Every structure is written in structure tokens, then in C-alpha cells.
Amino acid sequence: MEASSRSGQSNRFPPFELNGLKTYDLKSRPSKVFQEDLGQPVGPDAKVSEWIDSLPRQLAGMDLRRVRDHVCRAVQDQRLIAAGIGGHVIKTGCAPYLIDWIERGVLSCIAMNGSAAIHDYELAVGGKTSEDVAVQLPAGKFGMVRETADAFALASRVGSENELGLGWALGKHLAETDCPYKDKSILLAAYRAGIPCTIHVSIGCDIVHMHPHVSGAALGEASMIDFRRLCSVVAALEHGMWFNIGSAVVLPEVFVKAVSVVRNFGYSLDGLTTVNIDKNANYRSRVNVLDRPSSNGIELIGHHEIVIPLLHAAVNCKLASGKREKSAKAA
Picture (cartoon, rainbow, N blue to C red):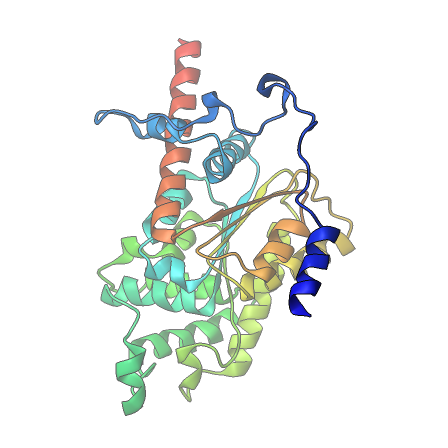
């Protein structure tokens, strides 16, 4: 019975006869990869800009250059570039690249979640951050550092007054504190440059929220002021750029709400380029940063400690090249 059944199936679906298949020549076929798009190995003396240009003209290789070109265009046209960052950006050692862009005038605003602000503060004050949670937690010592909680308690109270905001207050606190690693702080770099650095806290998520003298009311008010300040930044992003770097939830949600506010008031975001940089592709960063607010969204997936330095080098090299060309023409 089984053999008969198999025989019936075989007769019903015999091997397809391929004789007579229509073909065409390779030259006429549309293709997506061409020999000129292949990567080109460079010699040991190659410049960074030459190495960037040698990358394959495919996928992320193209996306990296697209982001580079958009940044350089925005700088040249004096358009606003803002970046929202998560704590992992600080922990992977990438703050100096963003600080350099702040000091060069590339970045005009930094937005942080609470963990990014905490790691930034601790690096400036103590030269270290990111405790070993697995070791500290069983003993009830996780998050119990005194200086960090004291700074947030003070800054939240100062920042909740006179519409100063939490980011500005923490930057001011660092400027007035005798901390040996001030050059490692994004908060302080933004404060010194006079650009907004906004902090968007989620109550209960950060270590400082466990300390009794840190006021939830003051934190909430200072962070709400920062949200409204960020709305003013987003209102000026027409033909500018928004980077979401290493924040999977908080900053994509904050950004999309700020976009809704400014569009409600009639501000145009035409020409806005949004960029998401993270080690994983995540739902909220994709829809709330790349898809919904902009028709020009670019995603770079990779480790922060590799992608951010690469992008920084690519942008700085092209900006320097543009300045040399401009000077040569003027001469």
C-alpha cells in the first residue's frame, strides 16, 4: 500500500523537464554588484581618508560614507547636528570622539539617558565607572557610591529652578568641582561650549534613585525642563541631523515625542537626516528614529568602540580636506 502510494506521487509529480529553458547573456542582466564596487586593499602608509574610500561600495561601506557626507554637508551649511546617547557609548570609551565634535562645533546638542550622565560624571570625577554588578549586588553595595548620588541630588535641585535643567546643572557642578579628569566629560564639554546637554531620566532605573536625599520631584522637574529644551533643539532640525547612538528605548521614545511637539506647532523637519548607531538593530530606534520622523534614515550596526571612531575619523578627514581645498582656492 505504501509502495503504491509513493508510486502514485512519483507519477503525479515527475522531475520537471528543463529542456527549452529561456536564457539571456550576462551582459544584459541587471546586477547589484559590479567590479568597480569591490573593496581595494591599501598599503601600510595609506591615510585614513584613503582607507575609508577603499571600503567596498556596498551596504555598510556605503552607509558609513553617506553618514560622513551628510555630516560634512550639515557643517558646511551651518545646519544643526544633535546626538542622543545611551550609557554604553560612555562605557565603551567613545566619549572623547563626541567631545572633539563638540569642541569643533560639529555637534550642537547632546541628549543623554540617566546612565550616560552617571558614567560621564564618574569618569570626570574618579577616572573610572561601570561597577561589577554581579559582585556588588549580593552584598547590597550596588549603586551605593556617595559622590554620584550627592551630585545628582544637588544638580536636580538646582536644575529644577529657573528652567535650567538637569544637564546644565550637572555641567555647572563639574565646572565648579575639583575633578582631575574634566577633559573626559561630555557634560562639561557641552557646558563649556554653551550648547544644550539634556538628560532624560526614567525614575527607578538609575543607581542614584536609590538614595534618600535624591528628590524624585526635583529630578522629574529638571528632566522635564530638559525635555522642553530638547523640543527647542528639534524645532531647529530642518535640513539638520539627529543621531541616536546606543539607546534602544529611552531616547528613541523621547525623540519621537519631541518631533510630535514641534510638528504640532507647525515646525518643518524637511530635509532631516536621522542616523541610528548601535550594536544591534532594535525596534524603537528603527521606527522612532529612522522610519517615522524622516524620509532619510541611515542605520550603522556594529560595536560602538569601532563604528564611532571610524565615523569620527571619516568626518574629520573630509572636513579637513574641504578646508584645505577652500584655502587653496582663496590663495
